[in-house]
Image (cartoon, rainbow, N blue to C red):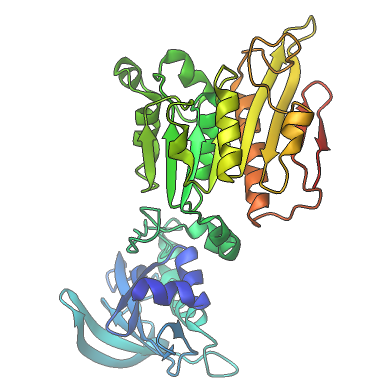
Length: 396
């Protein structure tokens, strides 16, 4: 209930996004760890509380009272003089075991005499109390940015996604709350796709790769593997599951390659990222995804040596039920690495290009589901490295 109240109330959500330690207790809004100065000129931490006025059971209304409660000594200025303008009355109200409100404060905002919402009210009181502690130690703050764990088992994250709410894009992020997404291939590009998709509210992210995570993989995947992790010789799916499970609950490892023998396992997925090598069997996988009606994105790098540096193309091919023909008519996806005319067949991999390829693929995926606006609706894009140019084609 408290999580729902915060997420449904813009003023409470803004307090949390600003880094204050919020708690809802018995109809009261509680902010913990507010710094203040006591009579001995020592910086201490108190708890600021306000009665909550709630509309319709799940959102706050404007505060009806300007009075606030406080657990702690009476706040003082930096010289140890009591802040008399806050005086209201002594109190002894227990909100829960270990949390007793010892005094109340009264300060009306000017000129209206009313606080517009709880963000206005609580930040005003915090500022009046904490400013004196900040004069002694500028590093102290009530904005502690304490980790907020996720109490909702239906959400995929272990802690709250306050990046979306801080940016005001939660409405768009919810569009990405797909039941099941697969990433096939966890090489350089696939691992960066995982890094980006793991920060979205997809319910389940299934990882398919039968290979092992070894030393060269560490130089073209996110993060920094330790020597101990490399020596452990883990499957790629297990290594990346361990990396991202602390953040995202729904990561499911499959230590297998996808081919004609097991491709039917993909038929209930909502979207697939194909980051697999060009090899025999890839065509079967693509035709099956089309048969299942699943939209997918195929990624690819074509990097070649030249006298003046590496040259090449970073490719993203999108296939949706509305548009499939370009994959075959224009051969937009290399199927077999041995093709002599395959400009994407080179196996040179560079971390920044893997990351770019993954970012392009994830951006296009987000366009398909309405997170980003999509004016061109291209189903093929190719970024040329030496010219720093992107060509879009195969529009709907």
